[in-house]
Image 1 (cartoon, rainbow, N blue to C red):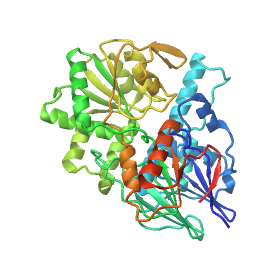
Image 2 (tube, rainbow, N blue to C red):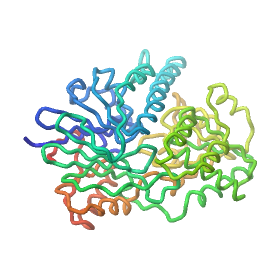
Image 3 (cartoon, one colour):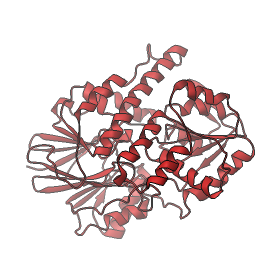
Image 4 (cartoon, rainbow, N blue to C red):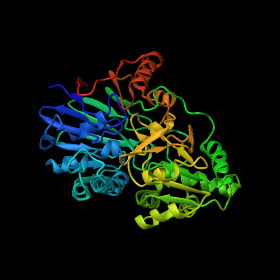
Length: 454
């Protein structure tokens, strides 16, 4: 019997990653992510999955970012009780991210209901913190490079992908076929994360394409960040930095610590990390020392360069402070969380600054800011954007197009088929063309909901 893959997400978009592998009546779901960005994508989160959750035999997560793991609590609420296999660091991160995601959704729904900023009566969260906490009991940690069996007769092996703590590529072996899921690949030259491991040989490869049509600049993050922070400090402004609580928050703190140590930015410039999730994630770097490049001294610098804000009261108190100061807050694409309140407060003042640090998916508030939008819609109101907007080009945690081709090119033997996923249409098709041209491999960009053989 054949082995098929159904693309339930992560096609035509960088969000909602879900890939259903089927053979002989058995079903394995690789990644279980939320759709983000445009409303028509977010509405997919509310639609029933094409597969009944109770019919899924096992789930594997490549990493903990919500576009790969954020649907897990909903899957649990819909009756799934099988195991969810992930690396130890991914399990630890999910224990932070998933309850936080449920909490934010509950808070946002309550805010909309309290202020009447909703067409629904009442607005409801997709899932809550309690759902997320219950779903964590399904997580099963699996060590990298050690083969495990998610379904009897099936094999799976994680290898390092870089990108964030615990991120992995995964090789699935079933019915004589070898299927490699790249997951989100990091950069070989990332400041804090280890480089991706060379890929094993496979018959079928699913390769991410977030930056499939772009190249990262040669300059490092400090060369971009230092002038921006000096500018905003000199005019007494506030820099609001939407960050991904896992990965980019820690990379920025590391860069800021180094810049202060070298005198490249004012040593007394106050830095605040206003994200309990990012604070707790920073602690995990000490628990998983082999998963990153940072030594003990660097980890200390990471912890001490910023004031860690955890309570809501502390977060609100920041708005009473005067600049200059820098506030790092989740989420990285300004889709929710505390950063929205800081943006609403500081965007209207031209002395202030917004620093965008990573990929901004189309349809997100981050993408609106990046495109020069004059108004930003938040909590049912339009906020004027007068603050200076800086988009860092060198801070991405994703491999660029040449690095993706380089990773694929390390395979000893040519795969039968490459599926280009997890990218906007232009990026995915650009990478498809490069795979065909540079590697002479067969590559296609699958459509959402389509089923293909391995």
